[in-house]
Amino acid sequence: MSSCLFCSIVSGDVPAKIIRDDERTLAFRDINPQAPVHVLVIPKDHHANLSEASTDPELLAAMARTAHEVAIDEGIATSGFRVVFNTGPDAGQTVFHVHAHLLGGRGLGWPPG
Ligand code: 5GP
Ligand code: ZN
Image (cartoon, rainbow, N blue to C red; front, side, top):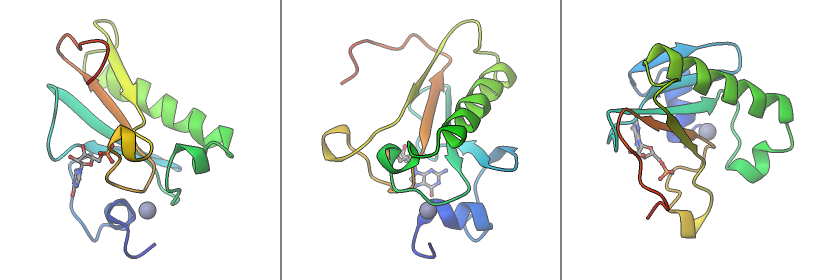
């Protein structure tokens, strides 16, 4: 999708701080970090949101594996981390290419705002 920001990051047309790149997924630092570690994990294929991506369980497994590997690399796998899929208006989704937020490096409040 040429008009999609995250597809443009996948294609290299928009720069990003990419920290992991495999066959199906890409992980890069969020431009407006909400925690010391704030990484976005996306599929390389375009799916608008979790509802669409959930038709492909292997893709979700690949995203979870990437998130875990990044958590290990960033040194937060033991201290703890959170993985969030904002989906739809009430959750505040702003980019309509499915992405998992990987957050950590500080205590994370619950319930989230
Ligand atoms: P959402 O609100 O859809 O769950 O999350 C979108 C995320 O994308 C936000 O945390 C926002 O800071 C991040 N973001 C928006 N534009 C860019 C960009 O151009 N580059 C990067 N790396 N992150 C972005
Ligand atoms: Zn896209």
